[in-house]
Length: 171
Image (cartoon, rainbow, N blue to C red; front, side, top):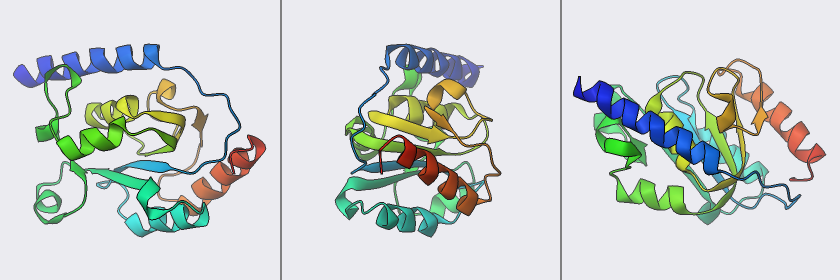
């Protein structure tokens, strides 16, 4: 029962954050990138490192937050990892490093997940991003650009995203 109440309080926070968000309309080129990744569904982290290099984003301006509910993975992963244990009441992120990343403004947020998870939605809604890209199977208000493809087809996702970012003068 406590988890349901906690998730309800987090959901309320997400709704509030999405209402307060203002869409960035400038055609400023992308110089910073944050990826929120559900590693339980797609585990090729190297694809995102290559994407950042392709976008000529300096390492210091590229951040990756990984979410997992897999206990074996949680024990072995050494990067920025968000789990349900790091999710507090009313949508508080209890990990100071992740909180700092989310509070740092970025030009592009890629929501690379295709299933509704309150923890992933909170990360996406909390991030200080100017432009957001993701999949149609999640809350559509989390993204400014929606790419309708299979999560496992990273190359198609990347090519479609690049095509539209060029049209929007962001690349």
